[in-house]
Image (tube, rainbow, N blue to C red):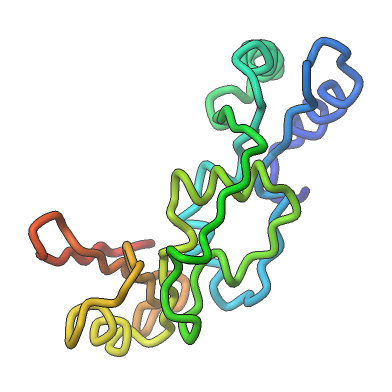
Length: 180
């Protein structure tokens, strides 16, 4: 909880005691994740960014009520609210080769609503993690295009608190984005 605004603790307590929700909101989403490989922390924090502070609800009514509470505690400017459902998302046939780490594979997520939102909005099951930049480039752009991969995150050669995102564009082009 040390990474969260102190007001978030108050909001969580209010949510837990509030009787107006149809279903208890889940969040902040970052509280439901545990990083299994800490070396990826800088890139995953940058990639998931605002989703770490976000909440998930299961109805529009709960979204409206939570929005009012977040506004009252003046944390609405950095806490998004996603609407999800409990339908299972099976990614097994959409994941890349198991020899590669993905964001999904290096996270332990204890709530399916949170996991589903990360899959839907960030494609964590198809986001490769390759430590060495040259190797990441080879994986993405030299040889056959990897199956079920949307992008690849890699660390910078000298600055291990920054990195790169390699991805394909719509017409078999490539894009490289600097992350810091």
